[in-house]
Each structure stands twice: as C-alpha cells, then as structure tokens.
Length: 324
Image (cartoon, rainbow, N blue to C red; front, side, top):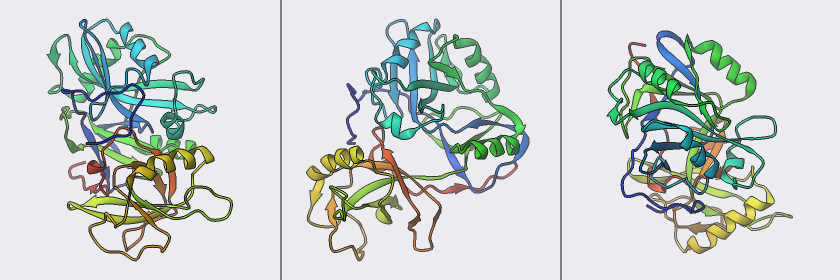
C-alpha cells in the first residue's frame, strides 16, 4: 500500500484495525435497542496505552505520534493499560470540525485538536471486545481523565431522530447508530454500526486532471474514480473547493504520477485536455446525489486523505437493517 506521507509517520508491522460502520439505507430512527453518536469528520485512530510505551496510529497502522503530538502526549495521563478507539478532529474558529484544517494541521497551529474516544477494546490486559457496547462505554468513561485534548464521545439513547435534527441544524456530517448489545468486531464492517449521513460524502481516487482555464493555475478539475467489484470505474470530475495552496500542493503530488493512458478498467470519453495519473492519491468529496450513470452531482473537494490506500476506496453500499 502507498500513502501520502504524514509528518514523521511510519507503517507499523502489527496493529489493531478498527471496526467499521455500514452506510444506512434508512433515515434517522428511534429505538430502545440503539445508541446514537456524532459522526466526527476526522481521522480514525487507535491508541494503545502501555507501560512499555504508548502508540497512536491510523486505521491502517500509520503512526500519528509525531503528526499529532499533542494527542500522543495527552495519552500519558491515562494510568491504566488500554486500547481505545476514536476520531482525531481539528476544530475551526467557530468550534466546528474541519477536515481541511485537519489535513493541513501542524503541531504549531492554534487550531484546537481533539481526540474523541468512543470505544474501549482492552483494559488491564483483558480484551473487552466481547462485552456489550454499553458496558465498554461505561469502562471507557471511567478510564479517561479530564482533558482538553482527549474527550469522551458521549451518546444519546433511543432518540436518534432528535439528535439527527440537531446535527442538521449545525450542518454536521451525520451520526453513527450502534446496537447497545453489539460486540466489537476488529477489522470488520457490520450493520451493528450504521452511518446515517446529513451531508453526502465519498472517498475517491484521483485518476487524472484537466488543464486550467482563466486565472486558475495548475489544473481545472480532477477526474475521480472508485473500485466496484474489483474494477476501477469513474464517478465524475470535481472542480470546486480548492484554495490556491491546495492547487499548488495537489499539482506537486500529481506531476510524478502522470501516465500516457487511462488507468480506468473501462474506456470513457475523456476531455481532450485530460492528463492521466496513476491511481494512488485519495481524496474526500461532498456531493448532492449520484446520477443514474454513476456520477456524483455537485461535488466539492474536501481534502486529500493521508490515511487510506487507493485499494480500499469503493462506492459505499447502503445497509438494509432488519429487526431494528
């Protein structure tokens, strides 16, 4: 796997891969069997607290200790051996999560960085993954010290509709619904955890770019793709959401990846000014809907992902949940 380099990062030879949520095909709901959490717009992270040495890393085992040293340092306040799961978030001047500010974060920034922790996988040398979620969260809440950096991710029981309504008012990305009695399935994506989105979002692979027009420099738009049944298929172009700095930075990463032919697995009619690139860079976009031909409508660029390989990017399937 190839990743964009995170400051001071290295790939760990062994690590815990977090449990993942499925995208729901249903709107927000109420149920006494579920709890509901904010869906944070950040980087998923696992922290291992051990007297022999702490570790902080991405879902794919890229170390975060140097890139997010404030969080890594704050882990030392946790006095028991544990493995915890959460999301690294950078807040903007209005106190709202900003993926772009996280993607460009430096340890010298004044922007507030926080680690919202929502699960506990191990405590005092004992695995907790087979305990019900609500028990794991109680253990986690007792474990975490008061901190300005490491925060317990609280939840709402039963009333998912009201929480989702509040998130829409605040224009947050959405919420995660979790079965109260669910176990923690390391490295798996299950319908015990559901993503219910307010803002449509998608990870995408950059496979090409068009020439700039007017006063814009470097490129006009990025051609995007995802993997579907093992094939690399296009989902359209994104041409908005770029600052001048982003245009410079992305172009510098695209130039070494240029190639003569399309990396897509199916021929398409591309713009005559298209420059193809090897499918290695991964980005986040938001959009309004997916058209019948599989293209994203009104996409907006959010930032490059430094924690994901292009081999992991696919069009998310929506989970149909029974017995809710």
